[in-house]
Amino acid sequence: MKRTYGQFCGVARALEVVGERWALLIVRDLLVGPHRFTDLRRGLPKIPTNILAARLQELEDAGVVRRCALPRPANGVVYELTAYGAELEPVILGLGRWGAQSLGVPREAEIVTADSMIMALRTTFQPEAARGLHVGYECHFGAVVINARIADGTLAVAAGPLPDADLVLTATGPINPLLAGALSPTEAIERGLVRITGNPVWLEDK
Amino acid sequence: MKRTYGQFCGVARALEVVGERWALLIVRDLLVGPHRFTDLRRGLPKIPTNILAARLQELEDAGVVRRCALPRPANGVVYELTAYGAELEPVILGLGRWGAQSLGVPREAEIVTADSMIMALRTTFQPEAARGLHVGYECHFGAVVINARIADGTLAVAAGPLPDADLVLTATGPINPLLAGALSPTEAIERGLVRITGNPVWLEDK
DNA sequence: CCGGATCCTCGGTGATACTG
DNA sequence: CAGTATCACCGAGGATCCGG
Image 1 (cartoon, rainbow over the protein chains, first blue to last red):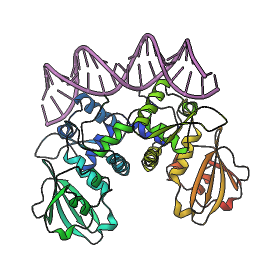
Image 2 (image 1 turned 180 degrees about the vertical axis):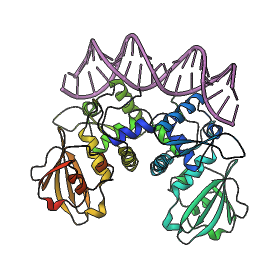
Image 3 (image 1 turned 60 degrees about the vertical axis):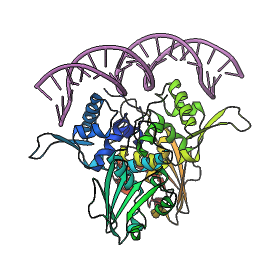
Image 4 (image 1 turned 90 degrees about the vertical axis):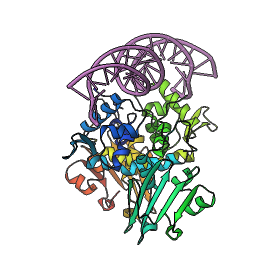
């Protein structure tokens, strides 16, 4: 018997499914792609393992997450979003955009993960500004390196470097206004928040 | 000292502010308009009063909610969203749309509130379909009566009846597909989910 | 009636340790 | 690697009370 809100309302139903602590952060990481238990654990450093196991079970029961045996080489398990779960993407992006406004400066012992930065980049992507563009970026946030490829007005972001990147960005200051969309990349460079390497021609918008 | 997620991420920050139990439902009700403590309590029947008081305090500290002395006639207090808090509207609407898919049929002892139905109507509103329209609706969900006015492509929904309504809708069955946008009003009527009174000419879309 | 404050209980969370 | 087991603790949930 789970806790309910006693309301016949879509918002209440949604919160009964993904409103528990940690649940939406798990969904955020899974929006990047399928993850193993240990991958999720690495991305959510403060989550107790029993809570992670419980959340995954609940999300699986709710049809948000699917548990899959890993393909051939490595035996193991991966968790991935169902189509239903993937429909949470606009909600997560909206939450991220709202929360980025009060992000401030990283607090003591607060970490940056590749998955969260990947979703942050997706948050700020403006398809209209990217029409007809074909670029590869490599972004460095501390030790975290992710790559972004823009092609045909769509954005693909993933972890790791991009050897043939047209442009390499390195964050050197508080980049939260950039993530919140309150600052353009050009302004960010002027303020010394981002250092770039490569061809500045590709600095249209992200 | 509050609980944190230990992540430098907009989603995590947002959940630290509005991710606690009941918080987003309070915001949902306040999106309809300012409420008094007792109004909120009525709309969230299962919330303990100490939790409601604590959430309001936290949301006020976070700059999401503002506490206001009530205007002249009645002395008292109202809580209203700040501009920052009101920016959560797209997130709430997205959550409501997602949750409405698995809304099912009202569970035992599950109630329908005016505020939740008002937000549900806002969820389904499609500005493009309402262009040039000027209509007044009155909607009945059990004992809950709300009114909707469409003018100049915008929607205004409020609690209570609308004496000069062009159209009166009464829900008679499981209306969740309608709320989720999976069903058109016309189809809903054919299935006997909604009974209408008035001039069917106004049945374009909501 | 409004706007809480207070007390108590119980279960989930969080930390750590341990196992197949 | 992928969890399960144990346990302390604190916040949710429920009831009652209290000053305007």
